[in-house]
Amino acid sequence: MTTITVENIKKSFGDADILKSVSLDIKDQEFTVLLGPSGCGKSTLLRIIAGLESQDSGIIKIGDRVVSHLPPRERNVAMVFQNYAVFPHMTVFENIAFGLRMKKAPEKKIKENVERTAALMHIDHLLKRYSGQLSGGQRQRVAVARALAVEPDVLLMDEPLSNLDALLRLQMRAELKSVLEASKTTTVYVTHDQVEAMSLADRIAVMNSGRIDQYDVPDEIYSKPATEYVGSFIGNPPMNFISPEYQVGSIPAGATQLGIRPEDFNVSKEARENHWPITVLTREKLGSHQQLSAELNGQLFRVNIPNEIEIESGNTLYLMPKEDKKRWYTEGGKIIL
Ligand SMILES: Nc1ncnc2c1ncn2[C@@H]1O[C@H](COP(=O)(O)OP(=O)(O)OP(=O)(O)O)[C@@H](O)[C@H]1O
Image (cartoon, rainbow, N blue to C red):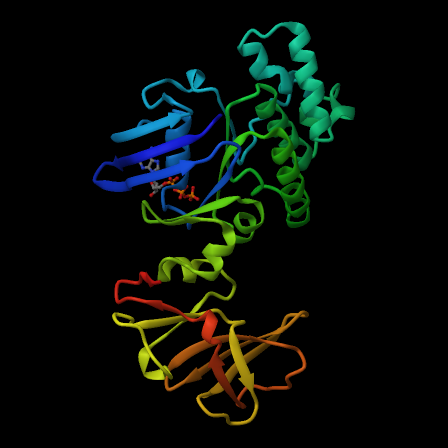
């Protein structure tokens, strides 16, 4: 059982508070993604879990073991970085074997584990090649195989796909998911890419300036963002936040903003009761649907509509948010449930 417990971790660099009491309970075999914009503290948190950085206060547990003050090698974690750190002058076999040799594993075990993880990553035909002769995607596979070969309790990955081109990224993403499911290793994965997070994660921790705004399964994060920040960060385009003067019907006590996703409006070209008349500013055809930006008295709306509706900028469109998709937020940006 390899759970990870992060308890009230704080970290400052100089007078900058980078992590402000962060807590997470990661389940055995779970794939957790730390998601947030550049500088929010994701990598720092990952490095603290790995033991590459020390916390100012708080506790890290792996399973039942408090590891906060142990060096990385005593935590049984493996890490994969963005710049994959594969040794070019070594063969693929030796690269994958590296961690096992450091641990002085017997030769038979090394061979077995290297062959198994290389097959898992579809690089078993490359074992004799020098890593310097590999493509970026192949090198990244070597890095992942090397991490898995040591049979870590925990796999930590920091933007491992960000150096790959878009197509390869997509392919590796799908593969990584199935490989990690098969390996049953508890994984923490850092990215600033919301699509990557949504597609890979069992649960996503959305970070906002050193805090975790929401830690939940992707569907909940998308459909019920805990804060305005999460609603604005996840979704392309992001959730609309609409002020009360445009509301129809009852508004919950304490609500100052309505949150509604661009695809969650009833849309009509004719005036209808309780529909807002909005003026279309721009329209983009995206293949599967059209994306509009529109406004009403300075309130901006982003709306996704089906291709069948013919509309041009300057036209008026009548909108009403779908009742069951409305989310309400307080002045401080917190959801009212
Ligand atoms: N060793 C360090 N000394 C001083 N400041 C640091 C150090 N490491 C990180 N920081 C600062 O801490 C903040 C958070 O960095 P961190 O790398 O955790 O962010 P991140 O969310 O992973 O962002 P990115 O995606 O850009 O890597 C940044 O402002 C960074 O400059």
